[in-house]
Image 1 (cartoon, rainbow, N blue to C red):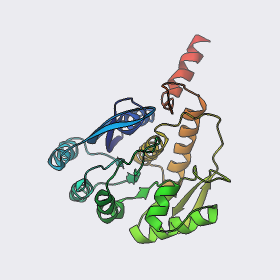
Image 2 (cartoon, rainbow, N blue to C red):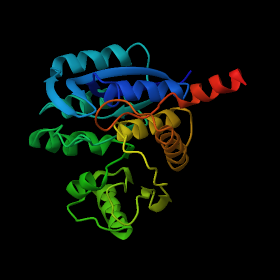
Image 3 (cartoon, rainbow, N blue to C red):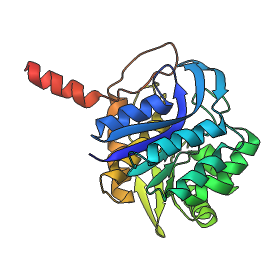
Image 4 (cartoon, helix red, strand yellow):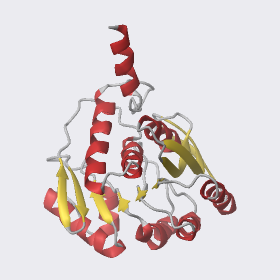
Length: 268
């Protein structure tokens, strides 16, 4: 069985962060491991508190994982502490980790800030340069590239700037664009476009976490970046299209929709 490590924050309501990652990795028939960078008190309506994991304890968790069950890929999400990005990057370099997918989480779906200014600088300086692929949404790509994005051509320019700056492949997620919501991958000097079907469902809590952990799972399974991204997009689209409706705000995806399809088939 292929193994995937997620390094992220905990979402007690189960829709995003570590919990969404573990569900996604498991549904891709990979073995999930986790390093928790922060505890959050949150639900579908917002984030109501954050407790940072100490850098020493983050390092301790990483040592425990890499010295026992070495991951075939690594997904990185919320890195909350000012120095956590450097601690994580140092350990990943030390263990020569591979297939690193970084989702540069800056703001939650509900609008809460999830990284400090200093933490963002550490992310850019230490983690992004060792990443295989990063998956920013439009606002995050604007911050990382320094340009305003209002069209697909702007996404192309931004992705190429980010790739040049950090030396990694870039998946720019277009959900924040007004005219379309296609995602754009820049990989090895080539652009790949992934059309996004507009689904009438406001429940999208944890979509970014789910997509990045699905890509990491597919990389662990041996797919290249373009194909891993294509398959991950299909998984996320199907999980949203189930229209699971939980909570009073932006609800979670149905990560286990495949099991529901099997259950229905058994009943038939």
